[in-house]
Length: 318
Image (cartoon, rainbow, N blue to C red; front, top):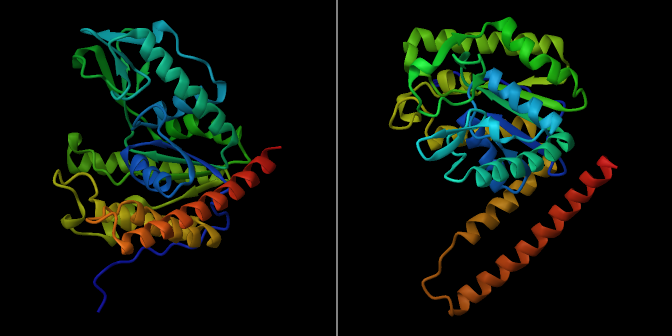
């Protein structure tokens, strides 16, 4: 008896290797999956502008990575005694303007180089809704808890999303783009409004796939809603996927997009991560000394293997 509707996905013809650089941008779901890859020691940068939800802000961040243009003093705002940015999530803030500007530009420089060398760009789209500043019409990545009357809220349609993302994909034909719709539910507009928003994103990705051969779709949204159709796979807020659900989706993602050598190497690194997390009751015992010796030998082997993969990256970029 079948108790699930399994999402059938074919193995991707293009696959991710430890020799590849990968960039994640988008919703908190990008944070979740990107952090797993980072923990497994892939060469990954995750959300250099913080969590971004709408396609317009994602496109703006990609354009900034392409140009590498620094943020200037006028790009920041002061809320009470805290400096913030409309181009970043609320994680980027400081009481000193120079400190904040230096921090965001340092991360911009690092992410810009990484983007240009990345073989894989993974975008997680969260919502079609954008917020514009009433004063100048600029789309903001985060309203920074300012009064609602300072913003106008409007929806993007399919053509808007395609117009924003298609040129960036076309300008980077050697990169593989994985697009996904975040399974996190945006409940502000209710169940129907959330579905309409997700539908626009799904249709937009389908159109981008039809326009560009290097665009891949990963059905994270469908896996959570259909394959894991149960509230036990949500966190306590009933909106975000639980850790168990994220791990399940990650396992499917890795099976689809990772090459076989990387899948095998991931097992070794997972073992090493488990060993690194071990805290002994008796660190001077003979058994722990032997365990620690094995851990150090494995760490050395992993480091040498990663250096080999990185050398392949360098060769490819020459």
